Length: 468
Image (cartoon, rainbow, N blue to C red; front, side, top):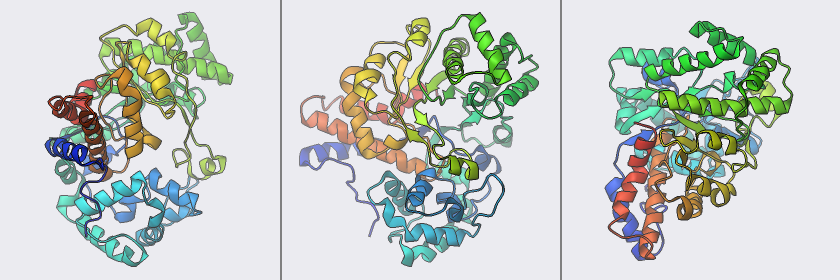
């Protein structure tokens, strides 16, 4: 039996379900635009086989291992590396068995939909994963991964990916992107400029990262003017490898537009490690406005991803490092926080700022009204903890009345898990078709307009918003 129901995520009511089916049939096979994500460019550069099923589905996926961790499974037992190089499980079969024994934990979660989609549609599996089928799954997937048609470039083409953006630190040498470009392969893999490590004074290695950026650009990054010029140079370097956006993962959405002398003084304190927490926040806030001004010059789309209380567990941070599933959403203010940036550049029609949130209470109260009036603002899709069928539906219900559809940017998958890309886009396309079908069935949207909207939500908006 199939692992997935053919009408999953569609309305229950008959007429609306029929409309959703028809809309989905028209857009289900559109190319995938993946304008923001975290897949490893080395995969596409080297085009080597994925090592084993555990390394593909379990060890790198924080959605997976955080759930297992919540039930007492040690990250080391799932092969998650330790910062001290200490022992972790390296036997992929053992990791997979542990995953399969606990697969029931994912019932009705987004991860279950993504995983079952991958098992069924990528690997041709029609039996449930559990302790009894664990070894069969492992052997079957491993056998597939050894074939040329399951290497990264072949899957990229099979998934019908038109363009995908990875995300690299401002100081990354982009060697893998250079290898991709020099290989002659036609798959479009571009980078995105992520300067958090040279903007956040509270991030470990900030001063060293700034110094490295100076070495890379030949600028004197001990001075404010040299530091800004180094950013401009690195942004231009990233554009050589296809970048159309920058990405900023700050603790808050705070922006400032400080006098240059005040910003320079804060920068000096930051290099010395002398900033108070509020001064560090003020420096990050001012740099968002500086990045927006640079976007006016070089055309990069500015993405703001605020509100994650990152690395919440000190013991996990000490043992396994950053980004190990312990990032927790927090309340986020946008109206007051963004005002300095918007007063400076908010009415510019040649600037594109895409806002994301982990605070759903801000959708109708703050984000939709802001995007519904400021020309530079667009709303990113339901993100991270809300990248789910219910989260996407809530996003549409709470933003459309005020911001409309065309002040949003379609869908992006934001994933490290390669095989989940078509699964995530399929969920988004089904949810949007279900929402449009409900609008048609209740007389709020013309049946003639719905197909064009479905196309834009699945493909057109992302392509235009990210200049792809």
